[in-house]
Image 1 (tube, helix red, strand yellow):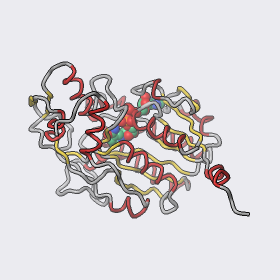
Image 2: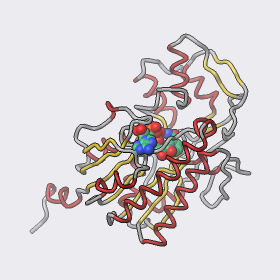
Image 3: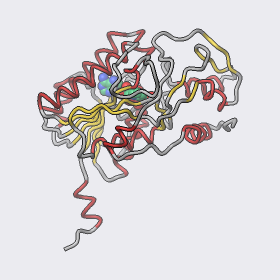
Image 4: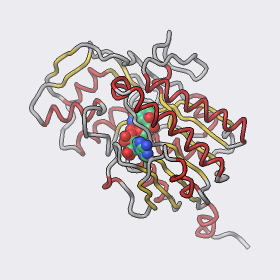
Length: 317
Ligand SMILES: NC(=O)c1ccc[n+]([C@@H]2O[C@H](COP(=O)([O-])OP(=O)(O)OC[C@H]3O[C@@H](n4cnc5c(N)ncnc54)[C@H](O)[C@@H]3O)[C@@H](O)[C@H]2O)c1
């Protein structure tokens, strides 16, 4: 008998755990997993996440993932873990090297141990392009030697090493995705450590000029959150990975902060460069495309224009 569509969907349905599911990327990922018919559990402690981001169809556990005993039961029966949760800020880590290490580094090893002990098949880890630091050339390829310029970059890099080691030592399937700068709906807009988009948005709303650190010619491979969501799901599902691979998750673009500011159509002012900031970043995504059969779909100007309109700002060009 031929298998019907609905039966096919049931067979493909999985139980996933998303750490940091109340945050920007984790909540967008959760929504898409649920939209595709999967079950999702979330662990979050609201360090930077928001209650309103939690998908009501997910099972939510308000826990700190650095507490191994508390999180262990949540991993029972889980097919795959997306370890997205972290304190994701270079300046926060420069100001708080110990606190950020406890979450980003120690937290990751706790999640890996809990996953291993519960018999989880695969962990997809949210790594970071900050690992590259300054490189002699662009785009950044995963065979380039890491050059972390901040505590955050070191912490995220150590997470990758642990992921690879857990695959080698214990047979826990792992994949690390080095995100480049991610933007889109639900970007963090609270507190001192916010991405450039919400930083500029605040200044527009306060009627102040946009503050640019340095000359504004530093460039980033701004990546829409929907592309980061799709690459995570591809990394979880692909049969070609799971051995601790590290892959770039960007779009291969190279947009300067001045260009971002221009899209806001607002006056600017310049301050000194910030310590730990990377001057230029751009992803080589050839290996990601090859191994995951994935491609980014949102060009920066389109994604940024959509986001600006969603915030009530008409993009300037
Ligand atoms: N946003 C980017 O541009 C970017 C770039 C590279 C890498 N990343 C990585 O992507 C991941 C998600 O980033 P984001 O932008 O969505 O950040 P976010 O701050 O919106 O989300 C992080 C989530 O983790 C939660 N969290 C923090 N510490 C926790 C703990 N101890 N226990 C439980 N939950 C905890 C927070 O409350 C929050 O909901 C992070 O691992 C980050 O390092 C993000």
